[in-house]
Amino acid sequence: MNHWFCIKTNRYKEKWVTQQLSEWCDEVYLPLLRQYKKVRRQFKWAIEPLFPCYLFARFDREPALGKVRTTLGVATVLSTSEDGPVVVDDAIINALRERSSNGYIEVRPVALRPGDPLEIIEGPFQGITALFEKNLKAGERIVVLLDLLSSRVRVEVPRLCVQRKQTAYRQESLL
Image: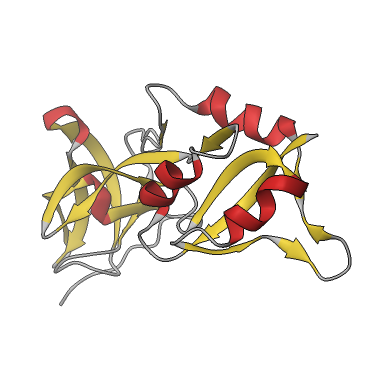
């Protein structure tokens, strides 16, 4: 009987192993993630595996397990010491596929409201707490308010250089 199994691949070989396994597996599923991130000093949309070094394959355990394990690029089939390969529930694969649109899962930044406390996590103001003011350029950049030298200063920063602060806003000054 065919079941889903989790396959661990060698680093950066997920797509290649997916092509190789499609020859003797009923289905192979590599969940992909699309996110806006910094790539070589620029912010770009990047598509990469949702689970780096892992993919899912549906096959009959007895005849195909040996072929899967010996496929170049496969590190191992996720297993327990007592029961052998772990069967992945169909509901998990279906849930991942439902979240996928256009072949990948997309992570969008959390919506911000004016006055939300943020922490700058990258750049010259790293570690400083700021208040969100507004979005610019289709959400790629934002305007924040910083307390600098006893006054609030508007500063434009890339959206990915900030994260929402969980605690109440603390006034911090650069002197």
